[in-house]
Amino acid sequence: MSEQGSPGEFSSVWEGSDAPLLERMLEFYPRITPEPILDCTFNSGKIWKNSTRTVFRMDIDASFDLDLVGDFRTMTGVDPRTRTVYRVADASFATIVFDPPHIGGYGRDKSNKDFGREYGATINVGKANDWNLSFLYPPFLEQAYRVLVPEGLVFAKVCDQVCNHAAKWPHVDFVNFAIAAGFTVCDVIVKVRINPLKSSRWKQQLHARKRHSFWIVLRKGRC
Image (cartoon, rainbow, N blue to C red; front, side, top):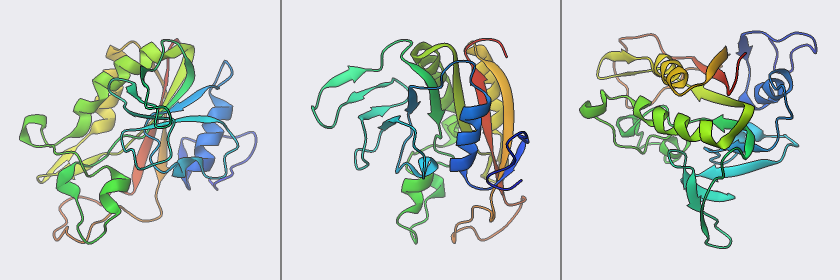
């Protein structure tokens, strides 16, 4: 599929960038008006490139241009303009976009200063968490369910990984945690990258290079 696709067709595989895919999802899935929209992992806002939608921008990294500097696990933070601390209100958003870190601190690439910032390779995760960032999902999902209105949606980007010579399956974890949190899992879109994610520090290949990620669609209600 091209990045634009055709107006009457939406495939489960997307070969292109996130921004046009996100727009297609916002057109395709909502039963109610998809606004207001909360992006709780906004970062630099790359996935909203060329978008005309109004998005509430939240991230834990205060160096970005944000509406709220806060943690998606608590939906609490600081307004960078007023320095006011507040918690995102119950049933206040129709759509939540969630693009959490995909690799932990073990994936740092010192040769690329922006690598860790862009891919979330800043969180120390080790044996206690099975070298896996899935422990971030349950607190987020609990908060997302609280913050969404009925029939509200979560669009979550999740990428599997290999660590310590073992495959990890965060997309499976995310689906199971979402069901436990009360969501209905409505769809999964496989988003294909042109090139696999690769660091110069990875010297030996034991698994296929990951060239895809998943956009998982959740609804606070039935599909």
